[in-house]
Length: 68
Image (cartoon, rainbow, N blue to C red; front, side, top):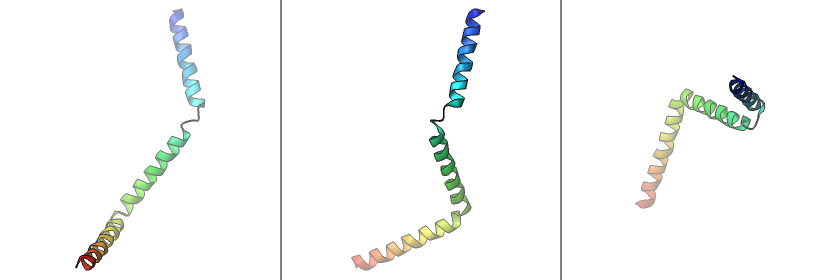
């Protein structure tokens, strides 16, 4: 029974240490920024696709004029 109490105490000490540790906050912030960017890409998917198509069309036309 004593071993279980020691193990439970170590567990809760570990949980408290984890909850007070702020070293992972930068990771959480980066993940949130990535989620927002993905959301913007989903919302503006058609506009981004049209813009990319236009850019590649210009590149293709300019390449044809340079190569002959």
